[in-house]
Length: 115
Image 1 (tube, rainbow, N blue to C red):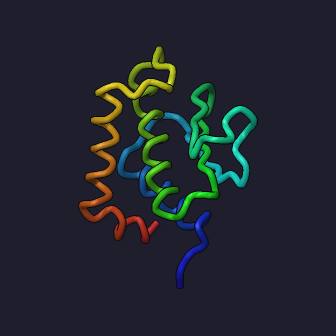
Image 2 (cartoon, rainbow, N blue to C red):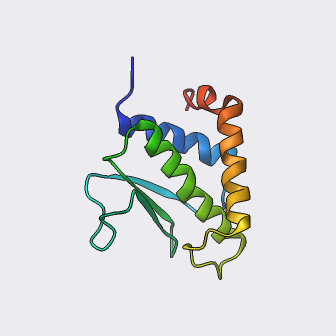
């Protein structure tokens, strides 16, 4: 049985938090409409307090998953350096994103179905 997009994304999110843990309580929200001022964004992350990742429901499943990885990489970088503002796509950001993508491609997609 194929899961709904929201359920599958949360399943991938649980896998992501297990394989690439962070100290804080990261939350995920699949948005039918992105917040004002961010309507043209596919995803966004709010880092203050308990980080909140928002992913646009308009994306297809694989787009949602990749967007989640992208925003989660921002959370990891922020945890390492609290002065990080969350909007910089520096070299260290892409190294973290690459690590997440490789773990997904090396069996993570199948493994995530257990979560």
